[in-house]
Length: 224
Image 1: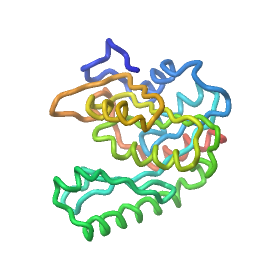
Image 2: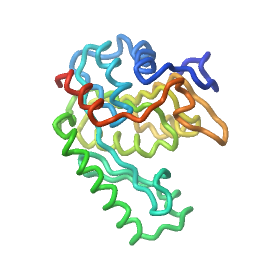
Image 3: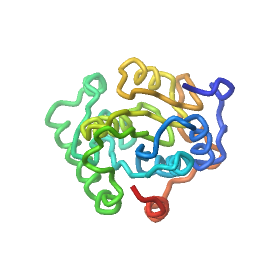
Image 4: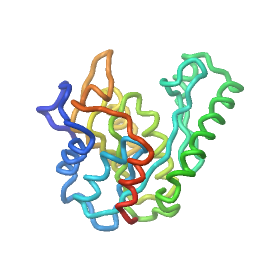
């Protein structure tokens, strides 16, 4: 589900809090009080907070780190999640000619980053047992979608009764991938864009990297 008048537009959100408020409107009346909003740290926590407040449910943090090659720290071909699970995009792996030995090294590097962040945010991680709970997995945007795939896999391993993906902005190819695969039972995205050039930040008028203190302050204001 998207918002037709926001399709293919840039600069549609003031900031992450504004984006979260719009997503909250899209999700209004959708869940009961036992649902959980799971924000992918960092930006997904700021987007998830207005959603959780609007729905009257808890907010937790999903620590997920992309697996990247040594020569490009931005492009991810896999992800390691807070529960230790790993997801790898085999087609990306093949196109980059990354062998299994290199994959192992890159995965361990990503796992180390996850463990370091868990030292900061681990107490805000979701319960290990999510049986019968609806979980709304939130990020501030979706480019390739590999981080979201890692988060959703971890939530599924936790036994969630229903998984919903909610992102303010995304590339059309990534949204289509999730819609085809059904990794999330429902997909909500306010601003869908296509084209060869895509950046999550282009959907926001004000975009900054979040500090650890900002993330913790948001999470500390919620109880799960």
